[in-house]
Length: 243
Image (tube, rainbow, N blue to C red; front, top):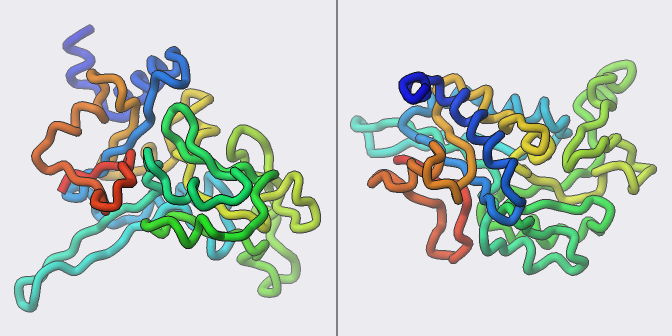
């Protein structure tokens, strides 16, 4: 069995470790992500998978890939930097919310209560990573096709319940609220890895419980290539990068 585990695909290992982590109390696990920048090919499969999973409208994107140009001509190279929500341990977005609609869970995921959010957008401004968006209730096909496409009207299942895209029903719709990546919390609680993890063609990202020393994601933290974005701000992101 030990030999089998050494050669198993990283996705299978992360899936197994996810199931093991879910057996622990919520407060004893800390979900985190490591992204290997050298392996990322900039295919944007993670971005597309995220939009499809969460049915996000125009202007709302939880996960982007930043295309950077490094160096000076003629010695120029490209680097792709994937940017989900950092799930900060000290999140600025939480501090500025006047109604407590955004908060950090015991397992490290920063979430938004759509029923409490008043749409003030203070959190959108406060996030130093640009990881928050506002849902203005727009649709990609509205006004461009004879009718709004049915796939845009389907509910998403963020936070474990269906949210219909209806601006007339604030109690069951994310329209008029701030929105962000939640590490696909609704998938995690059903023993499924985040959509961006399972669709990465380069196996450039790792996900799991940072509190488990034996997990694949925790083992990456000892690498000399490890860094976190804007650490000087004291946000303590749960997303790490291998440069």
